[in-house]
Image: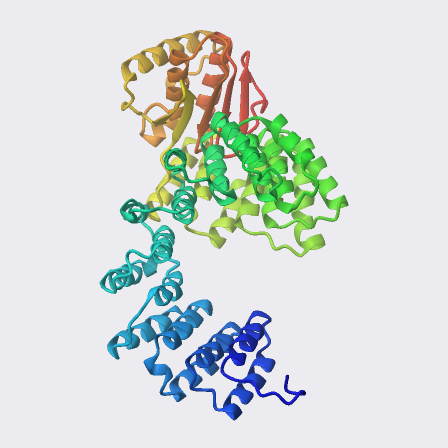
Length: 545
């Protein structure tokens, strides 16, 4: 255009500057800025805004601010403020964005939906909650509370900054909810561990005639995996196929993870085999699945196959591999892979890798000192050491860890178990008496305990057998209550799946093993680290977990 002798104008520059911003070409953008000055277009609102946006997207925020301050016209335009506010947010300078927004309000420049869409995404952490709520208040005062895009943005802010109840209140107040609104709330529940709420919301969404998309399905499948609700997961898979998303790799990976964590490793493997191109997430999901089921050799074979295909592992995959080796007693291989992390792949071991080595070696106190030095407030390591002491029947060691936790003001998550029957998911916590069938459940449990005592040839007394329950001070563990409840409400021969959030203790493991023989049922228990398949008095983990 310049070579032909034509001169650019106020309509030309915004398009050229947007291209520089999109391609991250700050030098070309600065050259265009020179042409803008020569042609006298610098005060044109659209040109000025395009220049500010270009500098911000090219991470030259100081240049953008200098341009904003030097041009008196910019300080009267909403679009100029919007461009710089969004630029500050984009460059993680949220405090500067807030200060500029306050200046904008003080000088009487009106805010609009674009202002809010540039400002609200800066609220990403719990410490930003008060600020986000203030922005929400300004949004209402400006009459923008009917703009769905802004409401969706605020909803995402509450999900990130918490508590989740505030997000749900805003969600309920939105009269016309779009797909993005539903996805934001579903993702929020999923990320905060409210798996049951995700499934309830998904049902509401379908009743509202909103068609889900891959983002919806990923959140729902992760919740099915957490709750072990394979039936719902199968329904979601069918809907994925009907919606035309069957070849979406993110959904394939989510399905592999869901089926593996629900105990159906055959279906997980079938989906994995059906994938034309497998990425790192695919391999991590299937390897982790085999590891949870105690099939460490298969997990190791898949890892070696992945390396041969040229896929480079990351830290998360090594956690799955080390965990698989730990659950299967493959100590030598586990240590080999631990050493290979940094030697072969340049990956530095983190606390989660050392945690696997704690399990792998059993040299608990030495490794415990190392991981608590790295993450002194991570409750998981204290629980792990407590479990190792419990397995060794070292009551003094268990009490010492509990006192250390109390001194450091760390609290262990309460144990809870889920079991599904008659189309409903039932939740139990340790010592639970909230279930409508409480009396029948405890009567059933007492009968089972008596039968177990008769069958148990070890003749341990109650004090020895219930060490972990006595120390916790919470009464009967949740998995026992879940199993007693399921036996009351399912037919003869029905397999019972129990999902527990913590590692199963030795007493409960022995109890379930013997009950499987007494009642001739198969129990599948997924605890925090792996699957246990109990049948005829034997567990698939061979009492190694």
